[in-house]
Image (cartoon, rainbow, N blue to C red; front, top):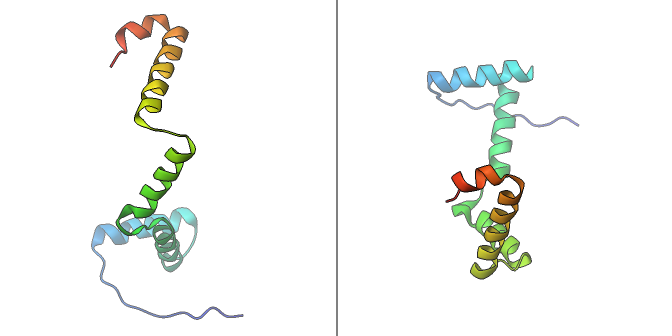
Length: 95
């Protein structure tokens, strides 16, 4: 089954065209295919106003029961663990 292709014209600055050419060469594909891949990758990572990312962070914090007290305790435990493994660094790496 043939994939419909829409021909379009866009104006790109020289540095963008050079970047596109480098991507196409590195991936051994046409510039059109490199542009399609870049657009698909950007669209897959796109999130309006970052809400999706914040929602994922909220979900992770809920699953970990990560409230300020638990977070502070975790930080203390990690610092203690690092200090136990590397006593010389513990004195100089405190923040």
